[in-house]
Length: 162
Image (cartoon, rainbow, N blue to C red; front, side, top):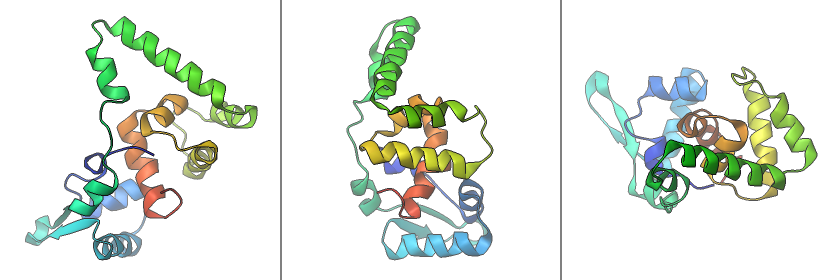
């Protein structure tokens, strides 16, 4: 999986983490403490405005070549070329998937409310090979940043993805 730490942590407070992770206060606190112990986030005190930022270790762990999908689309002149390239990329990725996973993806609604259903589909995809975040976003027809925040980051924190 290829994404940067900046995509996961800008300035994250306890409330943000609870909302992103869909968890209660105790679970969020435990997760954030574990991230601090692993030296992946840095705790910034500021009274009511206490927050976490990425540590240098997290930045190094997930630093990637940014010249993958996003920048290649921006260098093309017309949006039509970008759309055609995106469609072509999705088609080639789609052809890599076995029928069972294609069916799982087809059964996901655009705004699927069953988190476990989306997560289990993502985990099935990652069993095939290490995909980049933008590839998963293309396959699931989701926004890359939303996919990272809502699904990939929690799966990494839970140790289900690495």
